[in-house]
Length: 403
Image (cartoon, rainbow, N blue to C red; front, side, top):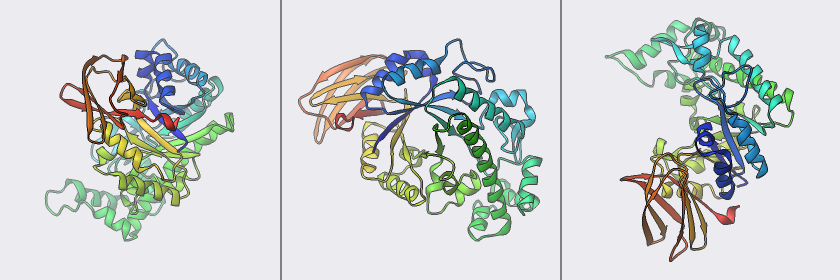
């Protein structure tokens, strides 16, 4: 696996400084940082004439300088259709729920103004910053009950669906007390029923159209820019009905849109294991996709579960792994029996346990955010665990042989 990536919030740089944060990433062997430049609020972590800045500092410039000095690629990460700032300024652009109306954060994929805005945003950052890639997140519908504006209904009808019948099916799935059938639309889709298939196809087209516009805008500015996207893992299942109907996000489409994708394969969140991870990776490979598997490095994941996730993908057909996220896990660095532990989280680490097979060494500490300690052990550890009081928190243990 060639890529070791981390998703990174701009708050990491704001709180601990680019040199400190990225030097520790480099020590861990990180090759790629997916740096959040515009998140859910719709504000920018860089200087922009289009997007309101979220502070006085140019956090992107700081991160780029520190990353490029260490030969780490940095990708500008956008939560594409989540933009509270834009919806506040353009309330008609809010994505419609089938019952409650417009959202105050999600933008409708059928909105005509937002794609133009995002094209300009992407082109501006490509012109002004030496970023290595554009990373698209939330480039999907969020739920089957979301996406019900008049424009959405027109798209469904144009594809051959009956919007009223679809509403009737949703009512039976989610809102009836008697005669509820929560799998109704999914079963209809699996059976090839016209309404369900047309509904999925219409949403799929909207996602592809929006992604294509952002890709083309970026590539027009920088031909060799790396285009990637974070995808929901259900699209890599053998049965894709859930992903097709809820998200409109097809892995088959992604193969033609991006240089590689990052399935968010979070084993603890999905209550899955390494076999599931391997299956996702294999299905992506068969779909013709290059993948960097996104792994859960936040609670309730631990040092041992993250170690097991990484081991499960050791021989998989992937380009590498990416941790979500820097700042949510402790970083540990092994060198034989020497161990350095760096607290990248915002809490105080009160206990550390180094493990190798049946051997365990424990140490009480008060490791505050941004602090590190070194520890000489009686054995070479294969796993490190960390605790904040009674709560176990995640640890990424860097493998010196993988650097």
